[in-house]
Length: 101
Image (cartoon, rainbow, N blue to C red; front, side):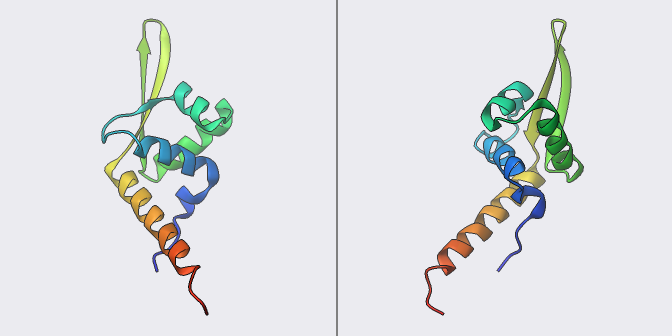
């Protein structure tokens, strides 16, 4: 059985990665949309996005739209692969939990 990905397994990071993986590859979400999706505070969400970025699971792009800063977070190919493996591991655990020991 594969190992649980400790970076993704944390509940808020799992929500972030699930939200990003629901989008087509190469498509990101604005910080405000991720905040709304996860219910996290700015600081907490920012810290967890930074953890995912350091792991190479997401890229963060900062731009200005008019005079307003805009941060967009996108799952990388490595992040999508890690998320898929993590989900597969969880499915293995679920499938195995119905077996008699």
